[in-house]
View (cartoon, chains in turn blue, green):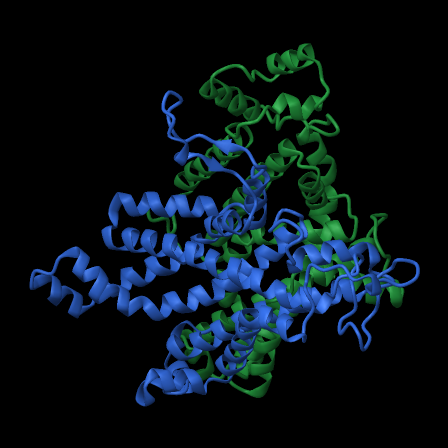
Length: 318
Length: 307
């Protein structure tokens, strides 16, 4: 252990924020992520200015004489797809879908995970045992298969949550595939990792002297949790959440690839790869470009998470 | 947390039961007539009625859950909507390809990850360690379906080093297994690295150094052997993640395995097959965890059961 803390940058002496920004992995990952976020937010503006094309528009000039997609040239920066749409614009607009679904799913999973982890760790006993077994059960299934199983039932059916005799139709839920159902599904299959991390942290923090002192002074459970425990485990939650976003974005891409992500014609990286596969030999850019976008985005989150972990949690490095 | 073996068996059974109930509700609690899906939109009322009777579709849901669990207990996973083939049979005929692929992949990535993990632990903090870290993070960030396509295009189609697709023997498994190995090697290299770091700082390794043991002996006999204990556990728990990757890789390389079956069933919205593969992976993961649990006690006799 001793070597670990010596070899890290000594963040505490310089203020933790300074240490974070001095870490090379944080610089690269965070910079990349910032770039992606700016691109995602400003993409519609680019279309207005004329730097980007409408991602949904099919250009007659975007297909060759045989009706096949064009390779990258001066006119279409990354070529066109089989419908004559601009691949570069579609990949840029795909950033919006990926980041929205990925971050929303991460938040869903984080809320579930933190609540369950804090309850399990703080309460302990039988409730802890039950929650942890439930968590292990959920870890048993491949996340992608579980997400597929959930997404498979999203076929436009309406579920009536109200008793048959009452006309409470505002309670109806339409099982429809879209961004909202997608991030809920991904969030619901991604929380177990968060629970385990949070629970372990709560267990170690709750026995520290200042918690015991605060408890002895008569602090309520809610006060202990919100003003003492949560602030102390916040770095861990942030690190785990950043790495979790890498997984949620990967899952979104995987579901899109399987044809059960955000429905067409929305430009999603996964579905672009699926649609491009039949043309792979003559137009490999249809697969290469959206795939590279996935790698770049997931890599940004992974590098950022790795860097944050080195600075904020030197003991758990790895 | 380590449980006694009987305790673990009990929780494994509960896990499987939970999965069974979950898959049942996903298939059956959704409104919409399953009979219509099976028979098609033009089927006559008689046919629909017959299908209702055959699959007990008119009975209350708790009764149908009972039938479902009963048939699961008898190894019956239902029938494909598309091909009518029993799902259990479809899975079993595809098991060999998937098992061989996974085994080769695990061997490949361990052969790479062990030396990388040991060496980065020895040279911790050097440029070598940092570059392996970045490469490992890169390998973590590759989507399976994309990497598989890329390797297939460059190594099989362009260079002709491997068969492009299909399954006619060992050679056809090499590139798919290599793809999986590339996807997982980074994670395991880092895992072995951190496990080694912990072990190398322990008292018994310092004692081994003090008595003059050679560096190789320290790294491998004292270090690696102990560092592998948590790695084996994670490997057992990671079977779920591996199956997720296998799914995409088999699909791209057209290997007749369980993964491509799962992907096909998703494309066809063949719900019983989707749920069957979910159920099957649950069984595999639970079994893998049990095996690891036994191995664990065998590798590290200090571990005593807590309950």
